[in-house]
Length: 86
Image (cartoon, rainbow, N blue to C red; front, side, top):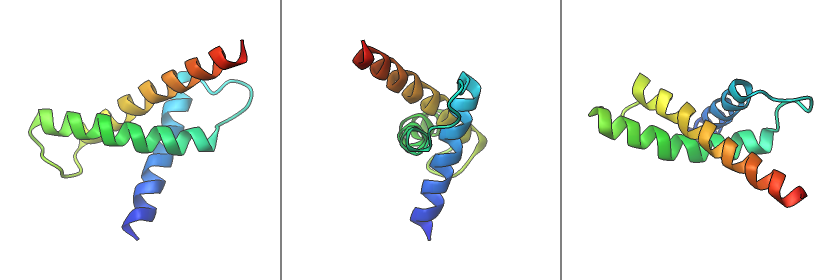
């Protein structure tokens, strides 16, 4: 059950990152949302939570870090996709 919750949280964070950056005309890419959310949550959320002194508990600082991490992963993903199309 925990793994399903983690995947759903990652998907929501990734979708939020795409909405913040602008989804374009295609809508939300759910594959990118899941990957960006999971990777962004792990890297961004973990780093911000540890730097804020919250430890490994679910806190607002970790959620904000997760969204920021997902935004960065989405930007890198989009940049790599645009270069491969050229």
